[in-house]
Length: 300
Image 1: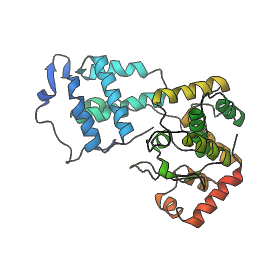
Image 2: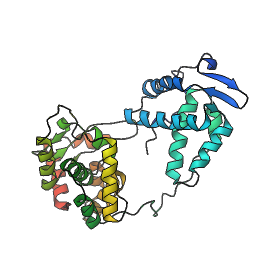
Image 3: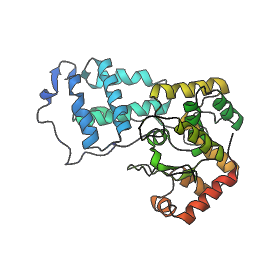
Image 4: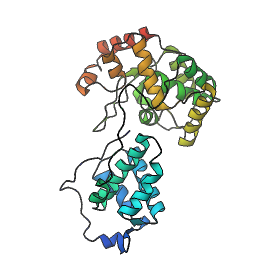
């Protein structure tokens, strides 16, 4: 879950000189005009400095709330909207809260949403999903129907990267000869690790890229709709839910079971301190890390 933008109000934040410019008063609360959503998007980009994907995600949730409330912003309409998510996973509910806190902050009504607390989440041994086995992950791979889908699936599973990192990864960050992947993409809350590909995964990716005729710098140009089909297809074939997030957990679990120390897994997945990751950029350190990755023998 992306918690960027969940910061206190600062003096650098522009204040609405007159809320009537963006909204009109209503007996049941404030009425927000949907056309003003462009200003909200600019606020997310400029003031909160959120990543593009987080901006889109936040704006979509704000729009969903406004459509549900017919533009009326109040504690009552917010309550009715959030009731839709009460029976869903706690993470799903909290995602709505976090995004809407940014929106209510923008319209200077933070007090209204602050009355709604985040749902408690059990961070203990119980997980909200079942981690698939190696055989199930392999079955998910075999269910893919195109070279592009197989390349993205394999890359996601065997690098342990976040979904957003895979989607935005550019070709210059992948060294197929040395099977090294260094996205070097950082946000205020997340660091990207240094990870690798197996020989087989590198060959699949190389074959896929060799047939590309576009000039798009991204490694994967698959649309969001097509990516969803990949995970639906894999889940149905394997009989267990498979998503990029689940594959990230699977990667970490498999590496641990194969004897890879946590400190190395943390570097692969961007959980290590940035200073540690930065030191790993050198040739000697890269070779050592690749050796750790290869000795794990993770492949399907």
